[in-house]
Structure formats: structure tokens, C-alpha cells
Image (tube, rainbow, N blue to C red; front, side):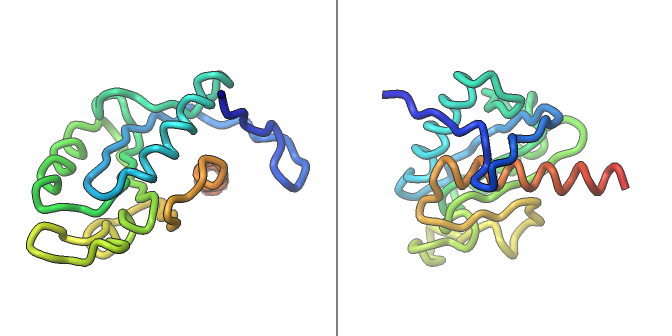
Length: 151
């Protein structure tokens, strides 16, 4: 069964037209609940021919989206992906684990979340946030950024 995205926000206004947003997703450790929600969102975006799309390599991305707690093993991999991104790079943390470590508290294997370690453009807590919440956060964040660029 395919999930369908609403063409209107709850306020009844149509979704805005945005510049394309290419996202490279990395799951850095945890239960993968957020990654599953992102997969659902990705399928719906492909079906809807959206300007937001998930790409298969960081060299194609403008936004690095991290889910899961940051583990000691994945920290250098995240850094390599970040360095491989061209031009202006943005970072987003989705889910409680990616934001502050969630239930996976800092230990010998887990560094925690992105918060306090890197400057993220978008922090979206939730365990896990729904595909609709993720899409809403991305759209609102993009609109806010485009308003700042035009001002």
C-alpha cells in the first residue's frame, strides 16, 4: 500500500514551490525507526514528482540528513560524507537519537547526538517523527531560508 502526501497543509494553503533540495541520508546507529519513516517519505516524493529528492551519494547532495545516535564507528564516515558534498553544505538531524542521543546515552560506543557537536540547520525531534512531520519541517525550513535569501 502506497502512502500519499496531502497536496495542502492543514491550514488549507497549497504546498509552496521550492528550489530543488537533494538529500543524502545517513543512518548512524540506533533502531532505524527514523530511517524507515524517511523511506516512506522518499517513496511518496518520487510518486509525487517532488523537488525534494533523496540522492545516492553525498557528491550529489546539498543536505546531509542524519538519523540515529552518532556512534564512534560512524563519526568518521559522517565526516567523509560531509567533506564529499559540493558547494554549500547543510546538516539536518531527524529523530531524538540524532538530535541528542535519545535513549542511547553516551557510552564507549555512542557519542550521542549531533546537537553540541556540529551546527545543524534543522533539528527535528521525535521517536520517530512521521513522514508528514518530516516533510512539513523540510518545507517550512526551506521557506524560511528562501525568505532570508530574498530579504
